[in-house]
Image (cartoon, rainbow, N blue to C red):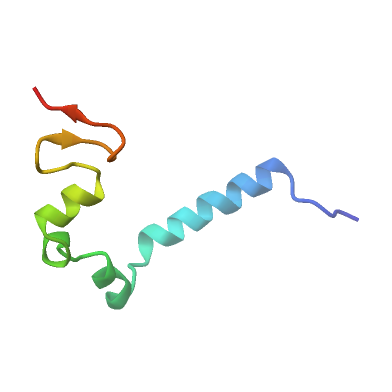
Amino acid sequence: MKNRRTRNEQRIEQENHYVGMETHKPSNRSSAAFKHDVRQIYGVKQCLTKWGVNLNGIIGAENKKQNIC
C-alpha cells in the first residue's frame, strides 16, 4: 500500500495546479482588493515617517541622529 506520493507525482500535480490558475481568472472581488491607490490611503508624509525618514533632514530612529549631506 502506498502512503506517500512520489516526487514525480507531486511535480505533476503542481504543474496541473498552475495550469488551472492560468485558465481561471480570479473573481472580481478578489482582483479589486489588489487594485487600490496607496496614495489615497496614506499621505506622502505618513509613508515617509512610517519608513523612518524624518522630514527635518534626519534619517532613522530617534536614537540615531545623522544629518543628510
